[in-house]
Image (cartoon, rainbow over all chains, first blue to last red):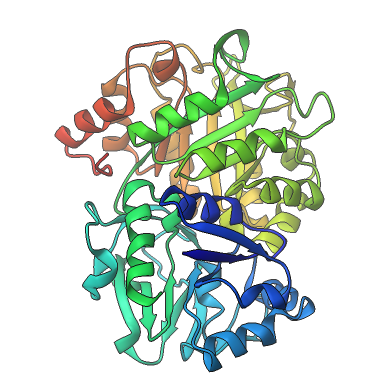
Length: 203
Length: 253
């Protein structure tokens, strides 16, 4: 399959591409709206903050093109970490910024007095949607975030991670959309298998 | 966080990895790319690589090496050496760094921490602090790879970094570094109570029980290993097997 990785100018796109290439998929780095047409799966990854990521996508024209591809043409897309957070209706990192709205919900800072923020390192993931965790052995994945997604509808939650007294949303799935708060591309063998499962589930 | 992290700490000098004792007497310990692949395969939880000459030589760690490392491994890599500006940070992230590590320039200019955290998110900014014990037993922060003392107390330096947005702190005790004599456990216990962000202990790991004791007595999030891995007969697989047996929660690998 052809995997199109959106280049937001500053992110771990190399890791994502190399992870898909491991299973002999072809990867393309996407800088312009035209690039979104050909791939079988789009990937939106991200380092940075909600507001700057939105601004960058709007500047490049990719924002509107992604809305069209994902909502109208039903192109499969995987969002990783900040990439997933952008799928929400609104984010509260450095002020209030509108997201894509594909997964109705909000992105807020992790507020839990008994746990450390940022949530950093390897943590346990508890699957709800078994399709994404097929052949995954240890269910531990790498996290690196201070904000988290709270979807309006619990039905989109594909996995959770216990943190403090509550749960963090680890992954979401909705029709042609998958998002992960953890970094599968950084999660060794389980991460690689997870990415294959994403392809098998939505692409 | 359910799992404690075991982190190989790589010191880069020129194109090779080196390991020394108390930041001196360095010996060659291999090629950074092949070593990264080996520890990834053993199930290391993360790698930290720091170019120890970059700040003094007024340059940045080699982006091509970072890019090669992230293409060949499947684990997070934190990158440091000579990062003085937001643009330097951006160069590291473009090369593929998952996190950046700042040390000397953060101490000299604490606002660098908030600029980097504002631009890249605080979880992507790791601040590394090196300390030496003086004759009175006080831990004195040092910069430029331990060669210059800082005239502010450690507590104040740590607090400032957290206020400015450090996402994680690596605290290295130079006196212990490379000596295989165990971690400076009481220091980590003291700093642990001061800061809400993850804390990584570094300097002195020499045997399984050094790690077990540290994790049993102090709630640090990770420990960094150097000499023990590169110049002694230890590997991550057996370290994790041992720690699991000691009822310390580490990730299966």
